[in-house]
Length: 484
Ligand SMILES: NC(=O)C1=CN([C@@H]2O[C@H](COP(=O)(O)OP(=O)(O)OC[C@H]3O[C@@H](n4cnc5c(N)ncnc54)[C@H](OP(=O)(O)O)[C@@H]3O)[C@@H](O)[C@H]2O)C=CC1
Ligand SMILES: O=C(O)CCCC(=O)O
Image 1 (cartoon, helix red, strand yellow):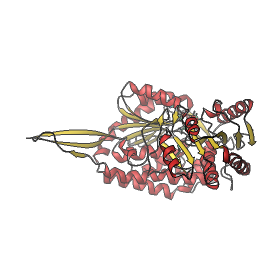
Image 2: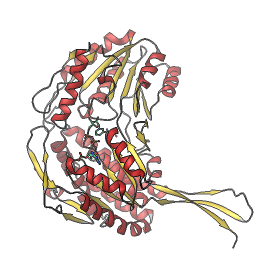
Image 3: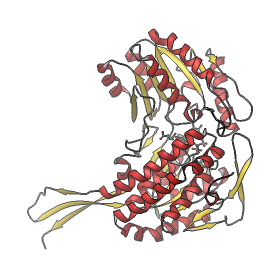
Image 4: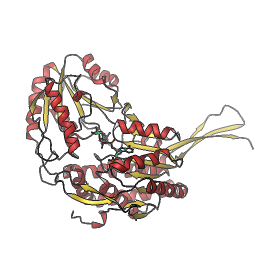
């Protein structure tokens, strides 16, 4: 991989401010999902390396927390500046290891960097309260203090943004962190921590423990059962999130969980059709549909169904599929062959139960999947109940507003929902009726560092981004100050 700054390409783990091999010397291969080529061999760490990273984080935490918020902010700001300066290299690494089109990778680097800029500032605003007292001889005050040593486990679908959305607020508030990136995308994580080191993040404050799928259980177990770690923050599948919560219960850790979704995207008869089509494409097909907030079920009202499905099918047929490094590609590969198999299993089962593909519907060579539009999907099909995580849009019909809300809420998940309508009364009713943590109203994209990202029900616990996104990394301490 050719970069402007080859120093960003790392293959060792980063523990206590040092680049280290795994204890065993073993490595695992990082594979380009578009070509199947091995890009790098990365340190295959496990429980022992994780424990050392946690101990280093404990050693570093007090002095990091003792810095003023402004001093920590200056380091994070420098890290942000370095990310911007190296945007092109970071985007290249991301596309080569994750597959998303280069334009999307550039966008993710900006999005990822924005969390550092935002939390560098928010760290200065972690205000406590003075509380009107209940007794003349006491004064009541709260202060906010960092939780302490924290751990983070991040997924491959947003290899940089999911890291800075956790490390940004952790470091800004005075916590230290041990991070485990996904097996598929360690290079983005290692490049980020190289920049963090250059920005002046001290040894032990942020460590990265790399490992493959066989190691994730051991690394996660050490993180969740350690008495030193006070919070575990996870983005990934609901199944793994539940396991980590169970493991974390033994030491009563705080948990931040950003888990799976099953987003409904509702188009009412009174929607602006052009905007609804544009929103559906952005929402469903970015990152080849591998996003937890992607539209998983598109519900379209009777009166607009035919026009909407015809327009969407035309758009889906026109998408250029290919290696994300090529110009004009809008749909890259899926992350690996088991992702392709999962998507195809869902599509085949839906077709066998009566759904029709009016665009795509088949596997392509390698890890590519033909962008697909299925109609006549019903709520009982697996494809309407599982996260598709692929470039497959499913359309269902509905007649009334009540029916749409009922279908939309008929899931254990509650991350993001979307709807299109120009009726202001309906906009309020539906916004309030949807059991989701985030609702896009006439908008297919809602992610920004400025707003609280997170879900309800089995989609998670806590919020990332916004001022709430740093509150999750501090403890409120109440001081009852008597007369002296
Ligand atoms: N909410 C979201 O953004 C995401 C949702 N998903 C959903 O999950 C499905 C499967 O994707 P997958 O990559 O397997 O998701 P996982 O939940 O398995 O992976 C997410 C992260 O968790 C790690 N992990 C996996 N098992 C454990 C464990 N036992 N203990 C600690 N950490 C663990 C992974 O490491 P490693 O990769 O090294 O095993 C990765 O870093 C997708 O199809 C999608 O539906 C997936 C990714 C993100
Ligand atoms: O899929 C995810 O888990 C992250 C969503 C990316 C975003 O913030 O939009």
